[in-house]
Length: 112
Length: 115
Image (tube, rainbow over all chains, first blue to last red; front, side):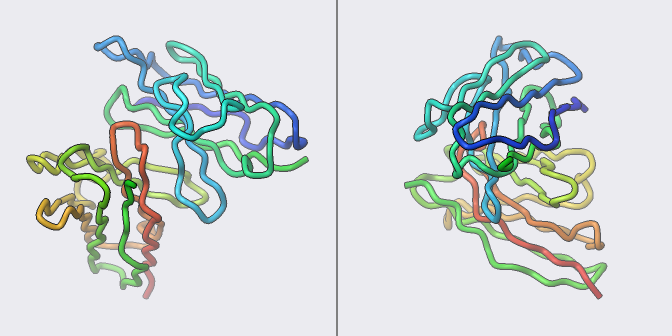
């Protein structure tokens, strides 16, 4: 199985600040079709996960441009600028290039 | 508007089984794969498997191969997951999620396994 190593585990942030979350895979996430199936989700307390970024860098409908994704191969980053209270929760990366699909272990964004 | 409405919380005894439902509205379930995901706060998210409601094809993570059975009823636009031989390790919230990038999620069903 592809291991998704997500860091940090916990991320204290000041409102209005900027943060980065890293997700590294144990093997390349480039699919044979040329696409890279790495996605990012936010799970707010007591809610379902919600899609933020799909295929590395594409913001889902309604997601603010404060969220951006980048990376390639095995190394990926989610950046959040001008952090707002609604951004707090646990962030997960997911790879769907290889079977079985695997999630990162999560990064908890909390107020400093 | 796409919505996935999951069935309510379940309490089961060890060794029993449970069947969860996920009713889609705003689109036909045959349009996309339906995934199921397990969530335990101390373990994060785990992918269980997917079903293609159009032809019933399923694919499971090996860990859940003998635990979960995915089905779909196109007439009611509903997907189902049955969990068998329940143990305390199956106590979790289970989500259904639709499209290849998990764009839409149900609200989750809490399954508690306790004697």
